[in-house]
Amino acid sequence: MTRLSFFGAAGEVTGSCTLVETGGTRFLVDCGMFQGGSEARAKNLRALDFDGDVRDLDFVLLTHAHIDHSGLLPRLAVLGYRGPIYATPASIDLLAVLLPDSAHIQEKEAEWQLRHQHRSGRRADRGPQAPLYTVTAAQAVLRQLRPVSYGETLRPAEGIEVRFHDAGHILGSAWLEIVAHGREGRRTLVFSGDLGMRDRLVLRDPEKPVPEADALLIESTYGDRLHRPMQETEDEIVTAFERMRTSRGNMVIPAFAVGRTQEILCLLGDLIRRGRIAPLQVYVNSPMANQATRITLAHPELLDEQTHALMAWMEAHPGMMKVEFVADAERSKALNTIREGAVIISASGMCEAGRIKYHLRENLPRSECSVLIAGFQASGTLGRRLVEGARTVTIFGQPVAVRARIYTVGGLSAHADQGALLNWLGGFRRPPGKVFLVHGEAGTMSTFALAIKERLGWHDLHLPQRGEHFEI
Image 1 (spheres, rainbow, N blue to C red):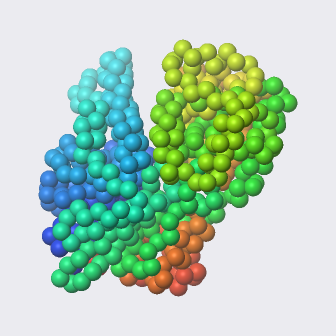
Image 2 (image 1 turned 60 degrees about the vertical axis):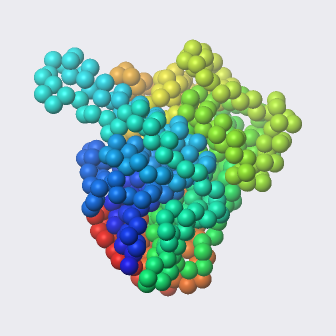
Image 3 (image 1 turned 180 degrees about the vertical axis):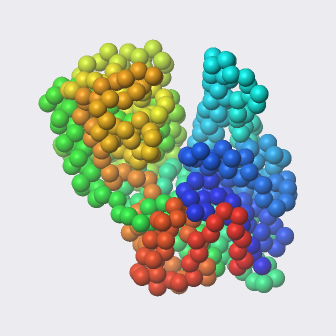
């Protein structure tokens, strides 16, 4: 008997964590942090309170490095887990950046709360919220990571075989094929992780699934919609850059450091190569994005043929798109003295933190400047207010007039849309024994489940909730 227990990304998008118990072996697939909403901290505090001691886990499998799939690994170790954590080499490289950064943010938030209590004169009866883990803990858990290449057969425990397959979502992302051999025979489990779109720059396309499985966990983040066609997205970007050229201003692009920044760099280079936009001077002003880009370039084997060809062209034509990766704070400040012709890519992607806020403060009041928003903006964020047409926003506690032109482009999501998900599912030769829809909001999963039934004729579909258990 194999038992699946869902402890995250069940009926919601974040906190991916599934406990698998089979033949006396217990292991986790992903150990992600809950993000967004007032209940996130409480969820993270109790996320690993499953039956048994975390020290009894045999191993952990990680689909990719995004914090909503990996962000509680340091907390797992703090609670006593000392075993191996298996991930692809590129994911391990990214985790060395992302996990300490996650801890750093938590530590700074606790420091801010303490200062705020002192300034306000309130009694600190309970004190600031302690971080879920420290930078020291995040760095320590990196020593438990073990690399597994795509296609390699891993045998982490007796009777268990695991293979990582390219998911095309971010660098190093994988969907997992897990085979458990026991007294009741062979059981094949497939965990999709997060799947990417096909025919996109930078990464290779997701690998097709295995022919059959006894259980499938499929992500459904965008299972209720289709992304805007890439051609329309390119046309929008071309329009924005033509306006920048004629108005003689700057272009500011908020972008997530991992994945989105690298995709935008390649997309701009490709548009220049095809003559759709004029040569550019680009500044990448995000320490994490700089590190993520270096890691991407260190894994050329994971990039698609189109990106290799583009990189060769850019190397042969260095004057067509000059890229400066800004490191120190003084150089970052100096960018705000540039009055025209600068393309500034900076984090965070939702404009809530980081160096992007300084560039917005300087460029939003200038009507000749433009802001290109190329990613989802959550409710309540500065990016969302810009998308919704705010005439004035608050940055660093001060009102800032919005006179710059705001462009919102779709089509650059790293997640597969409904069509891409259905096409990937169509690669199974026969319907999996049980299908579990995860990593999606309740309404989205219901819509996606209906689409699976109508297009593929699959009917044994489940929408698990956090804390539910299933036997296969």
